[in-house]
Length: 184
Image (cartoon, rainbow, N blue to C red; front, side, top):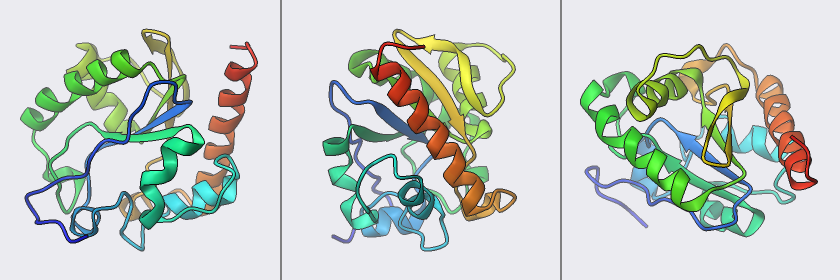
């Protein structure tokens, strides 16, 4: 499916999800193809598949099937751009409160933010605070939803290798399993 540049990607959300993956905003290649993380240089699908946490080998063309595996997708900002740095504060002021409402409505076990930049924007514009943040499990929750931050898999964030990203997704999988078994 070809999507116009002014379009965006749909959310893939449902009640009872284990993890909702929260991106900053869709890339232009993703919107053009109609699939999350469609830029071939983005390391998301390679790292997610290598981590084994989904239990299937997936690709951008199969992004709509993620809810079948307990995962969903949304973005802080639905406006597509070439780079996240193209976004304005107004984009986050509009989008972050909506993401918070979605998380409260769907209550996944975990909301996993792709990158500290996006998570900090969520804290500022969705939570109204400037709390400290590091990668990994956060002390905050949204309702019952635990918050977790992994490095952004964007090619612009090349300081993290596929192997490092893979380990962060494994950490996410361990948290998911712990919470599913009554821990945490």
